[in-house]
Length: 234
Image (cartoon, rainbow, N blue to C red; front, side, top):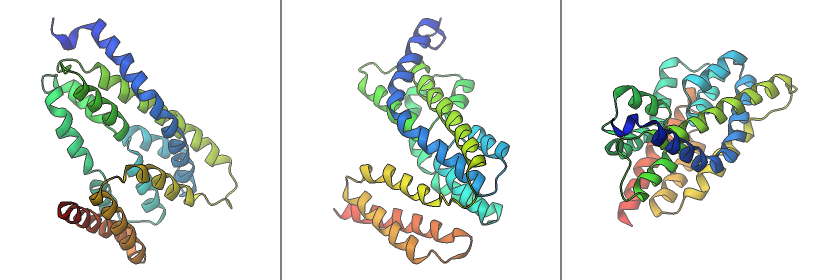
């Protein structure tokens, strides 16, 4: 029997993944609720808001899509924006690929769907910490990913319920900016990252008047280029 088909090992690693992910869920739950509230305030039907959490399952992409949906942005620009925002997942995939290479395609599709910032963080740390990487078992990754998935779906449902019952006069747009600031600031520990954040913020403010939120794309691209150049110079 191959290691990936060893049920006891799969179950044991699954629960270790759930336990490793659990502390991060405290921060994810409010994020999901805010998304649910904002989706409804942007005019999205409750079923569509919940369905996007199930199908897209990517917080940053969902927040941006919600904002663009509210401004009737053309679909092609929404897709392009999401592509740019989620480019980091290519790096995540390349990082975990050596550990998951022996798995069957069905496992790879499932784990690719469950690949998020939080699931990646605990999984790659586990793989790198282990002196004998579990190359043939997806249990830990599955546990971490499913724990986050369940939390995200539940918190979105709570947010959708709250959004449907909040007065229309309550503007909650500011919560989106506050949430991203809370996520990003603790990660700014290197010269290149600080430069990228400052450049992107400045360009985002200056180009805020561009149509279809094009300022977001411009700020992202210039922030990446500026952060890379200044990081290399340091």
